Image 1: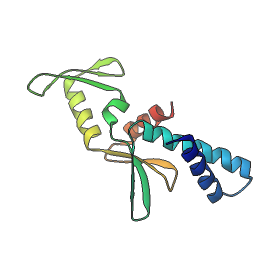
Image 2: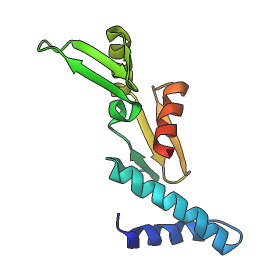
Image 3: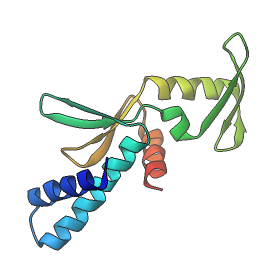
Length: 130
């Protein structure tokens, strides 16, 4: 997103809110920049049936999981945030992150997930917010 598109989106969001316009614009800018950052980190915008979402697809990287594989496709070694973890835990975590869905709802202005669990979702939100 260009800066112009971010400002247009911020005004769009501010118009939908109530209260002092400068406070609404501030909140709108924060949301618009978050949306731009999500798109810049690989998020894809999806719209259908009145829903507008930004799906985040690179969850394994975002979660901090580093995997090395043998030529057979099995996990050779795994690290989570730089700390070595067991291959079985890494396989389970990789499977969960691969099949789960994580998105930012543009209409509601909040993150949501499916099939990820609360702890994983919370950690992903913290990583994005940092």
